[in-house]
Structures are given as structure tokens and as C-alpha cells.
Amino acid sequence: MATQTLQLRPLGNTGLKLSSVGFGASPLGKVFGDVSEQDAFAAVREAFRLGVNFFDTSPYYGGTLSEKVLGKALKALGVPRDQYIVSTKCGRYKEGFDFSAERVTRSIDESLERLQLDYVDMLQCHDIEFGSLDQIVNETLPALLKLKEAGKIRFIGITCLPLGIFTYVLDRVPPGTVDVILSYCHYSINDSTLEDLLPYLKSKGVGVISASPLSMGLLTEAGGPEWHPASSELKAACRAAVDHCKEKGKNISKLALQYSLVNTDISSILVGMKSIKEVEENIAAALELATAGMDEETLSEVTDILKPVKNQTWPSGIQQS
Image (cartoon, rainbow, N blue to C red; front, top):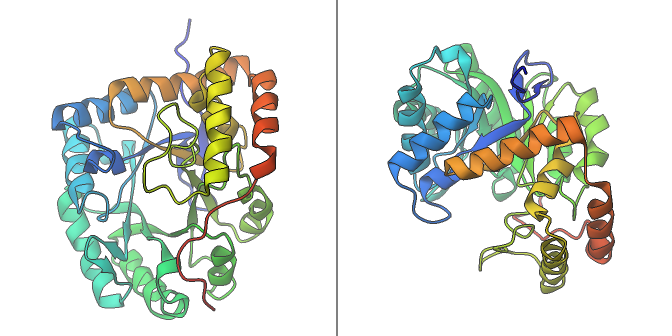
């Protein structure tokens, strides 16, 4: 029997094809607890072996630790550079936010050194809702275009939580300036508002990556972290959905990941991973979806439980024009 592999999906107009499951490397920065370098390397190696070709990090994760560990792990694979796609970010750091042209230009050199790479496939402005959107449009993105010309980055992206910010920026820059957007927590069972934006993004030729299909931990048996910004009502509904799945002997995290993977207009679903076990579970969920399809019955029951809080996201950042 031929080995099943992860689906590869085109990313906007970039010509890149991303694995449907992407490797979120924030946990390698010990953002969600301790991770040994050995476990981190093993997780990256196993993900690559199972068909993951897209790895996402940021200097902000673990105060540059995620980039350093991912860089070492990718180097240890010993495979040609064109076999994997790397995305990192700029503008958000342990010290705070700085989207100035000077800082993001310096930032990519620092990131390339930590990642031990000559270029990254994508450089994304990180959580732009916390900056001045006019600065992003008039200063940051033009600086990134220069980095593209210099060959340090291949494609340009923006990330944020409020979906309206994507349209604000994309409507104000020349077509083709922004190649990709990274949205998080807006394509999961409890909040699928990203779906409404997909036709617009497609019309702009912008690729779409969605992160956090588990709503930053709400759709897991462990639950969200203490600092999770969701309302108590939303947390309680997610907990009820988790408990319901557990009683049925089902895994809500698998269900949530599969729900996110169904929409092929989203090029990759980024999932944070830090161990071989997590990698194997996520890939297995994706492959099972491809052969057996969704568990529609359980999905329908979970959707009913979450209906009262559907699309209730939490506020983030500075909404500004």
C-alpha cells in the first residue's frame, strides 16, 4: 500500500505549495512549558518525514529561542533548502513592538542568523493591530519590499487577530505588495468568521494561512491557559464541548483540527507542536480526514453546544484608522 502523504495546497499567487498542516514553532521557544532540544529536533524531523514542509516562527516566541531551536533542527535534517518553507515575523519582540523600517530591516538579518538561513520564504509583520496601521502601509511594507528585492525574503505577509485590519491594509497598498495573511482563532468550530473574508482575499490574490484551530487551547482536554482572553461564557461552552467529546470517547482536538482542514481555500493550518506524539496525532488526524472524512455526528453535537457563543471572539489590540 502506498504511503499516504499530506495534501499540498497552493498559497495565493506565490507559487509555493504548503503542507495542509503547518508546524507552528512557538512551543519550541518554551512558550507552553519546557521542551528539551532533543525533543524539539525529533518533532521537527518527524514532521518533515511525515510530509510537513511549512515551518512558522517569530523572534517574539520565547524571546528568539524558537528561531534558534528551529534553525538548528532544520539544519540537522541535512536536506536541500528548497525542501522546506520557512516563515518568520518582524515588528514584535520581547521588548515590545517596533514596525519602523530601520528595525524590521535589522530584524531579518538577526532572524536569518538565528535560523542559519540565507533567506526566508515569508516575512510577516507580527500582530499589526498593536502598531500604527498607517506606518505599516507607508513605512513597514515598503521596507519589506526592499528586503524582497535584496533576496532576503521571498514573500511578504501580515498577521493580526481582528479581521477588519486585513482589509484596511490590503485596500491601501498596491496589488501584489502583500502575498499572504496569517489569521488565528477565526477558523475553528467556535469561530469561523475568516470564511466571510476568503472571497475578498482570493480576489486580491493573497494566500491564507490559519493558525490556532484549537482556539489557543480552548478546544483541548487541558483547556486554555490562565491568561486566555476569552469570556467566561465562551470558556464554559468550550469546556462543555470538550467534556461531551470525552464522554463519547472522542478527541475534540482532532475534531477541531479536521474541521479547519476541510476548507481547501486555506493553504495551511498552523498547529503548535513540540513532541513526536503531537506531530503524529496531528498528521494522523489530517490523513484520516482525507480517507474517512469528518465525524459529522460528533461535529454536529459540538456545534450545537457552541452555538450560543459562536463567533464571539475576544478583543485585541488597538483598533485604529
